[in-house]
Structures are given as structure tokens and as C-alpha cells.
Image (cartoon, rainbow, N blue to C red; front, side, top):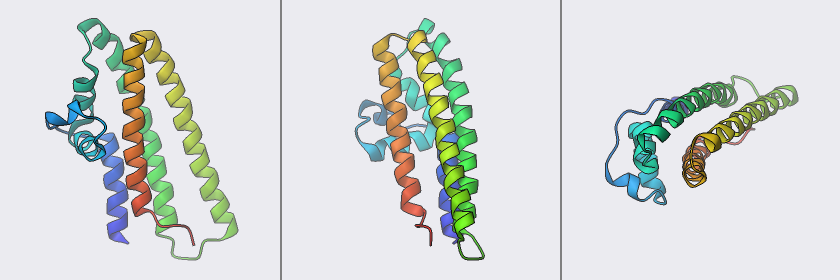
Amino acid sequence: MKNLLTSVVLIACCMAAPSAIGQGAANDVTDMQALRQAVKNDKRAFVESVMKLDAAEAKRFWPIYNSYQRSLDQTSRRRVVELQELMFRDKALTNASAKHYVNELLAIDDAEIKDRKAMRNRVMRALPPTKAARYMQLEEKIRAVADYDEASVVPLAR
């Protein structure tokens, strides 16, 4: 059980506070293993290497990026708390606690969607459409890897 907790917390930390990147990973964002490692090392540096923004674009983009990452960090922390509550229960899952768990996860998903829409609208105004689309794709790929990693360590409710 402690290994599962460690894995969930590690996933959240990887999404929220990365630290340094390998150079080759930015060239092929279809290699999901390389993407996972690049994000784990330093997500911001990885995004910067993929986006190739000029100075004016960077000045408009990075405040939006930073704000969105803070929002992701908050929802990731909420998700970890809920997953820990499910995974480390001392008693059987009741109908009431299952309903609470599902409602909380849906509320977290709703918050993420709201934040993603706001970020998308801001990025579309700040960057040329092709670069905005590239960033949106990159965030979706990063989210897909995080979702997969989470699903691989979180057991089904019993």
C-alpha cells in the first residue's frame, strides 16, 4: 500500500514540479516514454524546446502557462487526496462513500476542464493558431501520460 501511495504522490509531483530535461526528447513528442521522462525532468524546459517561441510570443505565453500549471497543480493535489482516501480506507467502501468519491472526481474533472478552456482561449489570443494548437496538443499528450500512469497504480474500487 505504501508503494501505491508513493507512486500516486510521485505522479502528482512529476506533473507539478519537474526539474531538468534531456535534449533529444523535444524532437519526437510521439515517443510517449521520452515524453514522460522529459516532463519528469523539467516540463517547462521541454515545453519551451517544443514551442520555439520568439521573444514577443514568449512574453505573452509564459504568464498563461504559469497560471495554468498552478491550476493543474491544485487539481492534481485534490485528485491525489481523493485517490488516497479510496486506496487506503480502513473499512469497506460504502455506497455513500463511493458516491462521495465519484462526485469529488467529477468536480475535479470539471475544474480541470474549466481551467483548460480558459487557458485555451488565452493561448489562442496570445499566439498564432498553429503554435497555440501545438501547445494544446502537447498538454493533451502530457495529460494522457499522467492519466495512464495514474490508472496503472490505482486499483479499482471494491
